[in-house]
Amino acid sequence: MLVAAAVVVSTAWGVDRWRDDSVAGAPDRSAVVQLPRLVPSPGVLVRSRVRADASLRVTQWIRPGSVLLSELTLRVLPAPGDGPPAAIELRDLRIRADARVLAEPVAELVSGQRVAVPFYGYVRAIRLDYVLEGAVIRSESSAPGRGLARLNLVQVAGPGTDQTHVFETRVLERRGGSVLSMACGDVTGVLQSCGRGVARGWQTSVHGSATARPVVSVVDLPSA
Image 1 (cartoon, rainbow, N blue to C red):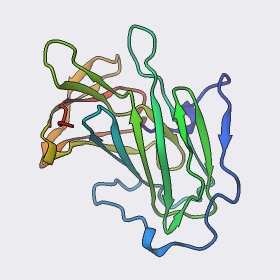
Image 2: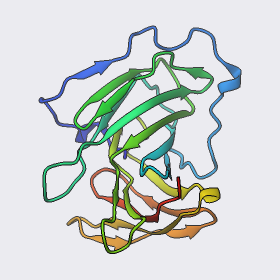
Image 3: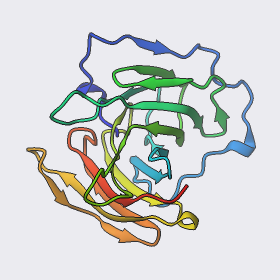
């Protein structure tokens, strides 16, 4: 879901920008970003929770490293496939940086759209929360209730985002469902089994550009 800024090449889509006053003036100590141990230094942890409606609730933690951060750019990628690209929608975006909450949430972004988020100075930890619609393909016949979750359809460009990425997939256990496996694409895009099972899902690491190759999970969807 994340990639170095040098990979972003586009003249077809405009870039929306958050206003310069979008960072709250006073820190909110109750919103201090706590980085899980899994977040590489520098690097990114992407935790996707599969929901009964086949959407993903995603949390991304970014450790930029010892650099000044001026801006992050978010872009929603079209889903890969042989046919027409499926519509992917990102909504309910919330961004926190250290003890600050960005005051203006983006209502939604769809495939091809992107937004630039300004920061000011040194940032130790960033957390993004959002819901992703259209990222899970439901099985229509062979295995009812099963789906393929595509985990890296959101591209985030900025310091630290071209480093190691840890992808983790979970489901809501109290509603059933399970994560069966994970696969990562090789340089030709062919999927191969990757990662390992963890207590509540599956986990893998990807080094470098995280949107250059597909990362997917096979899941049994939880009940509504």
